[in-house]
Amino acid sequence: MKEFILRYQRQITLQGFGIEAQEKLSKAKVLVIGAGGLGCPILQYLVAAGVGKVGIVDNDIISLPNLNRQVLFGQADLGKYKVAIAAEKMQALNNLVQIIPYQQRCDQDFAIEHFPLYDIIVDATDNFASRYLINDAAVLLNKPLVFGAVSMYEGQVAVFNISKEGLSLNYRDLFPEPPKNDEVLSCAEGGILGVLPGLIGVMQATEVIKIISGIGETLTNELLTYNALTQSIFKMQLVKNPAAAQLAPASLEAFKQLNYEWLCN
Amino acid sequence: MSVEILFFGQLTDKTGCATLNMDNPGTIAVLKSELFEKFPSLKEAKFTIALNNKLALENELIVENAKIALMPPFSGG
Image (cartoon, rainbow over all chains, first blue to last red):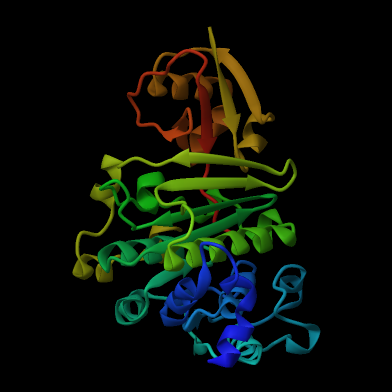
């Protein structure tokens, strides 16, 4: 208990936070999908802040072009699995946190089996197939979803599947249909300023901490877009989009049948 | 009377500008057709539209001096 108080002293001291919020954090279970540019800072700050259980899902290997932004990894880690290095570093950062690595891609079976074990899902992936799959699973399994994505010098953050003023919205209300992969450039194609996923990932971690602790106002039913070149933030409020309900799978059975890779290619 | 259009993300590659002022087209549907005429490659782009910072659906009326944002989805992480 003494270590607990001492370790989290700086946030326990915060007015409006206190021991109550810290205890909520230590009881919370958060699943972070993707241990890349967004995932690295999300993991670091959630584990440092003392979230009780953190799951990490990733199936990629660390490569040299990752190192401009995936700050958990070093040159000695090239060729190793991101999830293994991330889990090792996160456990070394905070042994009060239970770290669960999943060395695999988040597919339908994984989502159905593992989303119910967590309180909040964090989308830190890098492709539309995963993003729509995670969104649809979070809707069907009724899990709050903290979304983040980047493109070149800009990034987006949103909080979905939390009822606010009687309205619970999701990514499909914003973009009902997945774009084809060639319609939008990936980080590999369009490039990405290293600090950008750092900033957006930290904003996602902030939203997770706010949802768990109940402090402040979350980005529920809003999309925040940040531009690093101008340091400007644009926020838009979401509304129920009738097209979303028609395109999203209506049941877990329908969800299992969808081919997300095909939808995005 | 005009409205201000803001383009986000890679849409600016297609428009060559981040902002544009134009006469009020009246509805979101007319706005889209006017923008597609001006920037044909926008037709192939995915985006959503915010009218005065709120998601706008196709037949919504555009008020005078509105600020309209065209927002594409981002996939990177």
